[in-house]
Length: 303
Image 1 (cartoon, helix red, strand yellow):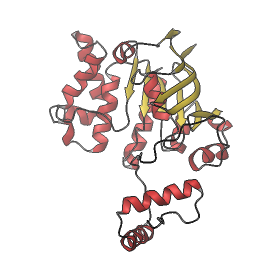
Image 2 (image 1 turned 90 degrees about the vertical axis):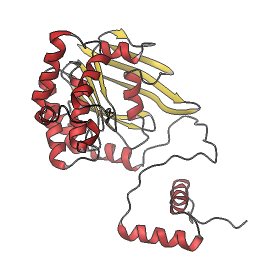
Image 3 (image 1 turned 180 degrees about the horizontal axis):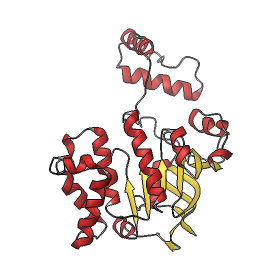
Image 4 (image 1 turned 30 degrees about the vertical axis):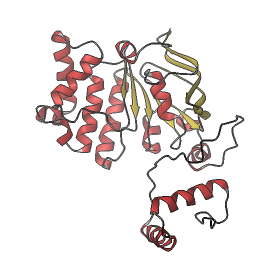
């Protein structure tokens, strides 16, 4: 039986379309990997399911019931837990208090059942038991991610939304987290997973959808997805969407993390120094020029 159904989802931020036509579904005990480049609409899709952003159009059903108009608290109490990108823990609270906040959000913060749920999480993540009285913000990144997932698991969810759980973590920790996903799947928990480690995500996923510019461009079992389908979504090469997107104002800017090699960084700094401009401005012009097809990106016209 289908547990989560999303049909024709559309989400906008002001006049900008973030998700234009996303449909997906999964059953209890299934893992669905949502893949795509930054800005493809992956995170927005999860936020819409958990009620943290409002859908402009489309249908979201959980266990046959519409989630339209429901608050994030009401959705959490139906059995949907969301682990956001960036962890979202309370750094000034202790580990134990962070776990209690997870119980409180799901309306299960009282009685023996609540204590049992916390004990289960501490058994799953022994390091959290050792540090249960430690402020969460003083732990390592991997320990904080375990806490973020643990705070979701104390709710005993039927559906777990995982957004970039492996971001910035050491490979050994990432391997442990993917092992946890397999364990949760065996326990019957449905999981929608946005993940940057595509190969490992496809090893534990039953199915995957690939998003590009807010739309599903490929879907199926991991073995059915071609490397070209996935590469096109991350590196470009797909056809232009048949939609009209209102351009952002000329002065609008979004800060993105960009990795460059040492030699490229030195060239970038040299170019910025030669032009007497900040490195971020030169890099922004280079990217804008590359995206627009400008043969000489980064060069300003004289005024």
